[in-house]
Length: 215
Image (cartoon, rainbow, N blue to C red; front, side):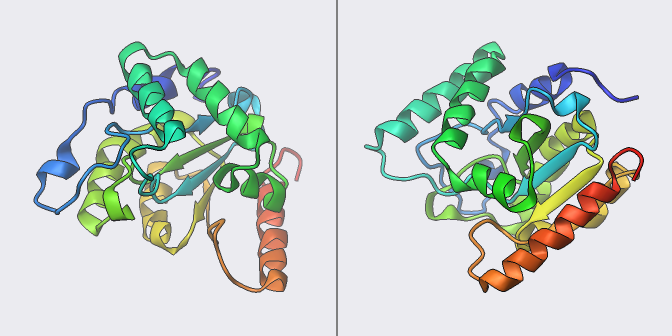
């Protein structure tokens, strides 16, 4: 049965707080400025959208210089979320990022005709790392422990796997959510020709439209 609010999804994200597993697995990983798993975007109308669309990226990146005040604010915000479970402050923060055109959020809206209030965006790996490293064991462990739980609470009808590093998880997600349409697509930073990007946008839009009621 589909959920009607974000409570369980927020609990799944909050429950990842304090996880240090991948930094204790002899993978040579070092945390960047944000030293906690990062919650991601769940639109306020996601659970009433039809179809429900979840965009899956690979990881939050490597962060930036420790003196960057924006990243320091982000780190504090996410730590506070894990303590309190207050997701509204996280949503407000990402709403500001959408409005200023941060590409990891706005590119999917603009390319695939998505309404951000009606979609979710999440990562396979939840922690940024120095040098932006995400080895296979990290991805598999984080998917198994955290990402799969979040996806089960989201129950998306369409899952867009963005970027080749996410594509190996297609079969896992299909087993997890059998009714979903799992679509391998390009990353927002793809450097391909514009004509190819436009063709990919057309293809993905058609898949999403086919999952809409009455299609």
